[in-house]
Image 1 (cartoon, rainbow, N blue to C red):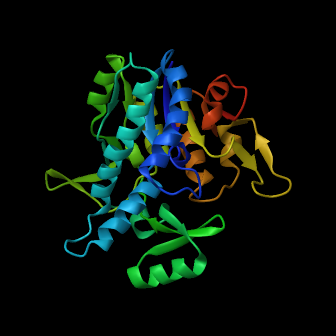
Image 2: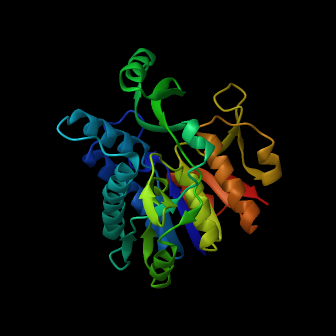
Length: 299
């Protein structure tokens, strides 16, 4: 089968951990063991998040006053290289016989997307409410609540077109494990007969769904830090949803910025292809594919 794996931030960083290179390598080493088992039997394409990393790069850029801070499209490109290196190295250590390639990936967005007027994509570290409000005031950030903490939010336009798609297909046909559309892809627009970056961060799950459609994938698996989609999540009566149809799923509401984009992504993929999608925890990857755990979304 051809499988798109969308890795959440927990693949490289657990909540509350310091965003160090050492921690990211350590966590990816564990993730690579699960992914390698599938890669020996299936075509694997990996899309990863970059929320904590791109936020840290933005903070580092602002701290250096001798030059203007880099825009978000450039920071996404930086994070693609950094995270792709970590994922690729750990996968190569697990399966030396496989080529693992990271593709710096641009994704076209609509310059008139309403997301540019409604920043809702979380990036960077978490803050207590008072600190977050102070940062919003001093730096002009948009801030929103993320669980019990607060984080910076930025525009997140919907992905429209994968610029390097033909190159990705060539690498897949050659038997490579491809790491692509990292952080949702570098957001670009085509204007005045040229490509240029725009200020935003694309949701990686939506980009994974678009990629899965373009590559005729058999499965889209979104891996996160919970073991599936929950009804009444966080409440005493929460219940894991094991099997659900797109129609049933679209009738439910989920928190924006966390499970809602994942639900949108799997619904988009399943409706477009007729193939099933899955959501679950990274450490259960093989059992998710086998349908033993996680949430299975059917047409």
